[in-house]
Length: 217
Image (cartoon, rainbow, N blue to C red):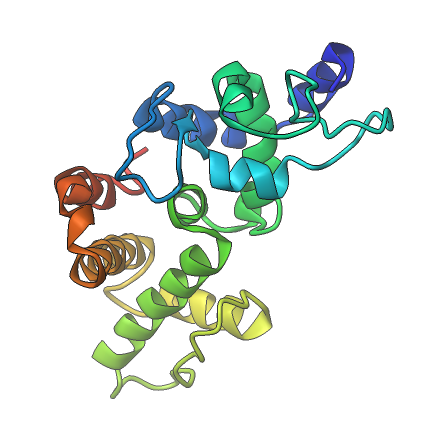
């Protein structure tokens, strides 16, 4: 990827995204190659597994994958080492912030969605929002009018938007209740990972701290 082209993309980012990215960048840190990390070598939150899948783009049309940074014909650990913060910022916007339309979700839900997409993938982050909404709807079952529970399918379409707006209008609920629910769902997801794979227990304390801090702008 040519430097000039990358700079143009960076300048187009919203201020909200820039703040959200900085927060994730500060959490993720620099280069780590932990054999227990299922994503492989990681830098700025970009794992090797993710980069191999998403880094094949060729925006400048030179026939070389833009994230084959050492231009040796493949994307490997050397390209993870060569990543810059601007590279990660571009990838995360392209792969997470923009597809989830995070700018269109009320703060700090958009930021929480983004954080969990970086950490666990688009579908996981979206399903977590649907579960968060459902948990509030169940709690307020006797209140009318109230929408049906969402199908937890990761599709943040009109039904999810409508249910989200309904929760915001519920007396005593609102955005504070939603982000609190999202934190709880995130913590549940991390604990489920450890139950399925006990080798990941070493990461649990950090993960739970991350969940607890979601949306604290």
